[in-house]
Length: 420
Ligand code: UD1
Image (tube, rainbow, N blue to C red; front, side):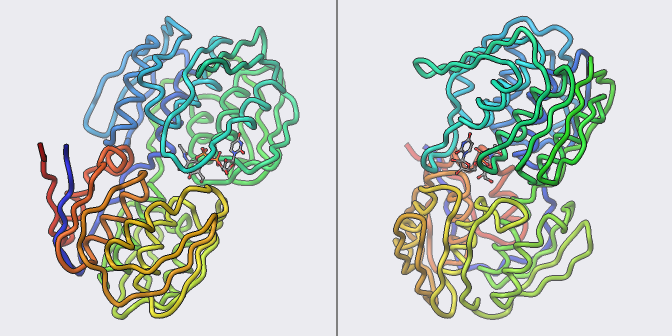
């Protein structure tokens, strides 16, 4: 078993280069199934979710050449099966994008129920509603999803809930459909714009991504023969911004889009942090104990739920009492128990957590319950006095490229250790 051993406290300082966005990349890879040809994707994060996505595509018949650690050329000319491998698709959430992409490409898909972080109920009713509106028949039976469509026909679709996954998935299914699809009440996250930009580069006709109405004019074919670079990871950037605040550090983040970071910047300023915005890089520093603040997670452009645990570390060290209201995932406060082992004073109930700020955290053995909780524990361990051992690293490795190397480069005393 592997664990991360972090010895703190350390003030993190220096530069971090932000990787390509996990949540964009895990959608772009299935999106290549819509292309009858070859394309190259660059700035891919080197994380386990991407390796698994590539393995799934290969099992479906795609040919993948790794040009470097962060770039692949993918040939989806010959897709030979519509059955996605269950053992691989159950390992992460974004395997649900195979449904939209394969319905578009082959009119058929059989895939296991998606896995991923256990953040509470994660229904896919809005995805299914969208596919069925386009003319597909989707059934869920014994842990498998079956989708079939003789023909997909564009139509207006209203999302009852703002859902990142459903917006992207329906967009994928609509790209090769006959006629025009409009998605109303669409999610607006940066990775939705990225997937639309990618598909448009390959010949799709998608307008309005990044607003709450997306219009997709179906096209006959996507041509491929293009290179696309994944958008910088908003959540990884936010993670390091909050790491700078929690450790009273001074970090400059390169390769980010600061427009995507505005909700985080606003909260950092509210807790007394400093930010210098250069458009494609950002400097964040802190020279005192954070002020208290209240947070409510919301769909983009609100404060992202995927940065809630990292912000929780900052508020656990705040000067006063803070409240976080989690409006997206019902089980996203599992990390608070781990922070409490480290000396934090947090009471979580339902979708609300109350933070009584403490002056210091202390090292302890802790367990990462999910991906972003794991990142929060790395930040906490760096800020805390003493030794923190973090277990369940498979969650962190799904979404952060070389987390310990990136933290080590900015001064953290962190090591990956294999334990019998
Ligand atoms: C994506 C992200 C995840 C992030 C989340 C919210 C990926 C791979 N994952 O997850 O990291 O935390 O967005 O920003 O991009 N819902 C329904 N029915 C549906 C779909 C969703 O009720 O059919 C609900 C969910 O239970 C949740 C809310 O809508 O309460 C938002 O979920 P959604 O945006 O779909 O999250 P994911 O796409 O799964």
